[in-house]
Image (cartoon, rainbow, N blue to C red; front, side):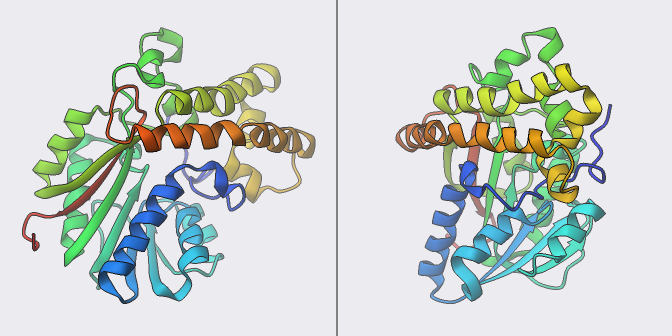
Length: 289
């Protein structure tokens, strides 16, 4: 069954941002760009969903950044426009039609949602096309085929093989070598690479994301489980209020573990062993060195 991005758009949750370990890495990089440029940074997020990432960026940097987001989902873009933090457009990631070039382009946990590897390569090339000469692309992508990570283990269990596709809409799974090959095909040079969501992060993801979804579906059925997704809860406030409170309390209990897991990834940021996510800073092969 294909994931429906109109019924369950991504990136819509505007509460609980502290639970997303990606923000620490992203905000640090933007702060570095501001120091490097000494002027406002023009940011484009490809696959922005409901604008969650850009809302957090705006809350930290305010008018020091100019924000634009694009996404394929009309529902997500409609929600993002209500945030009032930037310009949002509905369009395909491999067919971008904008009239501006950007200092920083973000692709945060979106490549795995694309339909095929050629679309990934075209999306990366579109990023290069809309990049300022001295600009950077920041990519964060799950490496679900990385040895010893949680999804690598799932792939060895027949009934758990497609859980990330079912619950999160991941059409593609990657390993480190494949991602680097696609970057080269898109004529992008790697400036930095590091990894996150290591073993403690994997335990956190299992306990606070996968197991609750499995239990919800088992106890209440697929319809209720789908309505309990973050995006659906945000857009349909008032439904399943008691389950919503249980979910908030459960996530709150995981906050200490998420902090410890984030610290583990800080220490092991250059180790891909057991990592669940890969972060790459790229520049155009035609840009300055």
